[in-house]
Length: 191
Length: 191
Image (cartoon, rainbow over all chains, first blue to last red; front, side, top):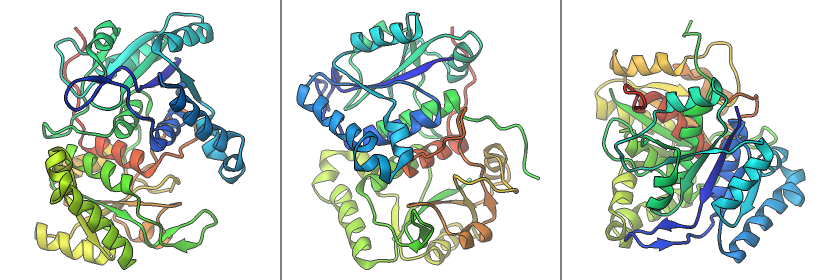
């Protein structure tokens, strides 16, 4: 039941709908790596097309996996080791094919609603019971471009609460979705 | 079914088990406020005992609810409006009692396992079906001190994946737990 995750910084939308490359943020690297490690998800691809941003990502990762951080905080090393920085989704796809020996299926998540969506339960079953190799894609900024959504194998439903307001951070959305797909389910009840 | 949340910066543990006050971080304010707004949770208490940190929190909140940020990003205003900065949990308790007309129950979350824990399902039922007024407590740093855990009405199970590694950020843990207590449940399946 392999599961990977990719955080896409290009191509994504900005606030007014243009296609842009967003900046990498330190906390996206850390928080999502820690969630990936918790939910046994690997690799965590950081997709970035700008060489300087790739270098920044490598610098953060090196600090925590080889540098001072590796001794200061061993759990952080265990999380950040899962990261692969790649220039585009094609490279992520080729990496997964090599790693898993099979073509990965891509599942996208979006705050928007679409007519054909897959439930978390259904995707969880496909991963667990049918052993499908899946890579989850998350967009930064104002979300993945339509071309990526259209080409994906699965479009997951938006994460919602009791209201129609769902402006979660990508860190929160990724954590929640990994929990929905991989979190511990409860068997016992309170005593 | 009222639900509130409190992010505690004092008293919490540091890495070596001492009782400390942690620093407030900008992204804890934003990410957890956005999750609170998504899952209809209010207020979001930021519990901080150091006056300078309270002032920092108010400055961030003012920027996004009254200042430039309020016009730049209306959804951020809607999220950060939920925040109340308080100097201790007693103040949060009195605020809730006034707001809800009833004594709140406190539910704590911890990465540690304890013998008597409440499942998310059970707490969800108490909130939804028995209309219990609950405030969730999250500790920053290395977690809430034992006195707070011991006095709480409910101790929730740790959020886990398929492994025993669970070093989630407090932002991820809070988002996941709010989703478990308040997230949309799936009725339809894939077509």
